[in-house]
Image 1 (cartoon, rainbow, N blue to C red):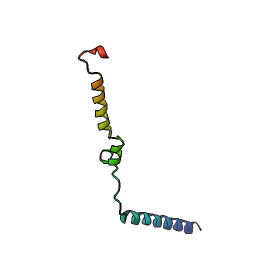
Image 2 (cartoon, helix red, strand yellow):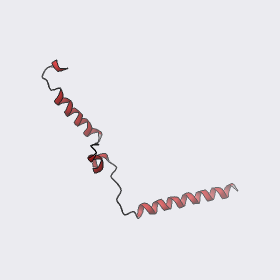
Image 3 (tube, rainbow, N blue to C red):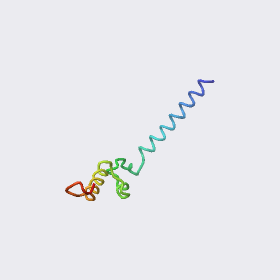
Image 4 (cartoon, rainbow, N blue to C red):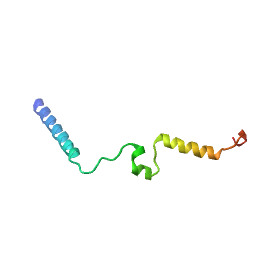
Amino acid sequence: MFLQIFILSIALVAIALLGLGVNIFFRKKAFPETSVGHNKALRNQKIYCIKTEQVIIDKKYNQKYKTPDCTGC
């Protein structure tokens, strides 16, 4: 009894994986770019990679507190 259920469950998992593989292989749409820096939709929403975000923050900070001495600190 256990062996029959085990074989049936393995067969169902194999069919599901085969179906997913066929779906991915014959998909007409390209996969979306997962990298934040290359994804156009994320850039349109002003979401950047962490390095770009840090550069933007540093530029804003330097413009705001641009004094030759520490009187503005």
